[in-house]
Amino acid sequence: MACEDAPVSSHDTFRIGTRLPGTLGRTGVITTPHGEIATPAFVPVGTKATVKTVLPESVAALGAQAVLANAYHLYLQPGPEIIDAAGGLGAFMNWRGPTYTDSGGFQVMSLGAGFKKVISMDVTGEQDDHKIAEGRERLSHVDDDGVTFKSHLDGSFHRFTPEVSMQIQHQLGADIIFAFDELTTLMNTRNYQENSLERTRLWAIRCLAEHNRLSVERSHRPQQALWGVLQGAQYEDLRRKAARDLTELSRIDRENGGKGFGGYGIGGALEKDNLGTIVGWVNTELPENAPKHLLGISEPDDIFTAIENGADTFDCVSPTRVARNGAVYTRDGRVNITNARYRKDFGPIDPEITNYTSQYTRAYLHHLFKAKEGLAATLATLHNVSFVIDMVDGARRAIENGDYEAYRDDFLGRYYAGRAAR
Image (cartoon, rainbow, N blue to C red; front, top):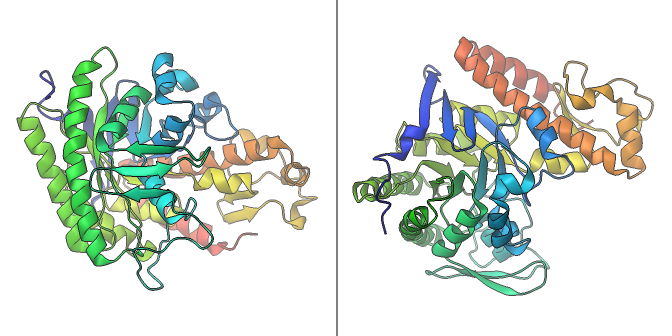
């Protein structure tokens, strides 16, 4: 059922600002029912409606403009009906800004292949569509209609289809939601990638239809923007095809009175050396006036590369995950604060960075980690999230001021000169 009062184009929620000469990069503003996002922007991950170990108010104080939560995890616990009853994700977690939810596609891959939380970023080794991580059980099975999976919490079985993913994400109430897709890995064969891409295209059609239906049914709630997700692994023709296919689906949907895609997510495993090339392929095919989100990156060089190739927002769990293990970012590279050298170091993590954690010494953080105190993860997480947000905010200002290249070269030159964790 089409949304009768939908706008002609969902792209009126994004306006382009300053363009980065000679590249696809730009600044912009995404408008949502819960506020604006100035882009490029880093979006911290709050998987279970929380950025682990820190208060939502603290994340906002660091300058985060939005947070991204995980539909799969929130479906299992506490359940989307609970969050819906609370007034949506933002109200549930006391976050007053824009929110994103992913579709559950990453967990489908992870549960199926058993590779925990990280997708391989290289193509070393033989491709094998049936390979799973050593010692792991395959917990999900994909078919053309959807995915059956076994809960990692209690072993119960569940079924996700494009319609179910849309229903869950509408109940979660995020401002920006993503179409249900099949996330492949670089280990999958070319033949599997082709079949999977078509499956994801057909799922996107179903996502649009259900999104339009739910948007009418739930018109009492703030309207949500559905973003399509592009797959295709490392293959140029498949990536470009995905971009053209989703663009056409969105056009047809809007012509038929639907909402279309409000933006696009670039997903899948990306070879690090080809990340910029792949992002560039799809962004030369996608509508220029649509915002693009690159799913799951946070390394400084990757973010700068993505910005230059037209990505507008980014998310990744890495800054918070490594923080909980004692790794903190500095302008001169990543530091392992648990190393013995910091036991009597009474300076801040980075004397050039001012944030909440700056008032504490390296020696104190070292002590907290060694003593296994919960405050250790809190302080390290606050610092790392602040570091990445500030880095991306600096890139946005540099584009606007016309000195982006100097900013990038200085930042990356210093950071990777001290690349080895210390």
